[in-house]
Amino acid sequence: MNAWISLYRSQPSYKWSNGDAVTFLSNHFMAAGMYHSYHLVLEKMAWYDAQRYCMENYTDLVSIRNQKQNEEVMLNGKKSITPFWIGLLCDVWEWADGGLSGYRNWGGANCVAMKADEIVCSYKHYKFN
Image 1 (tube, rainbow, N blue to C red):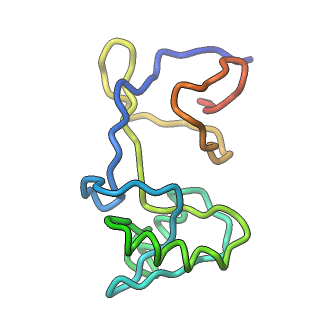
Image 2: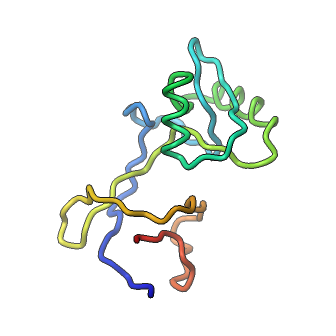
């Protein structure tokens, strides 16, 4: 059974996984190592699992703050034949009554990318279990 719930995002609030404000947006991602090195990890993981792996083995998922870093990530990303995660995070959900959502029980599948304001209600974009 599918049902609409009153969980929504009032305004997208993008930030990097380390908490920094976003000054450069990119549609790609990768793990960051020491001294601005980038490491493409060729294992399939959900975003939070990938972040945990990067924090245990490198520093974090990559944060892109300028065109030069974007070009370096893109160059390293060419080794992958599939899309890959970066440290860009939009995680502000609130209930219709204005309360913030701290409880999460999303489905196991990764979310898909979609263009803003082009959502067809019959498509399943997010699943709350």
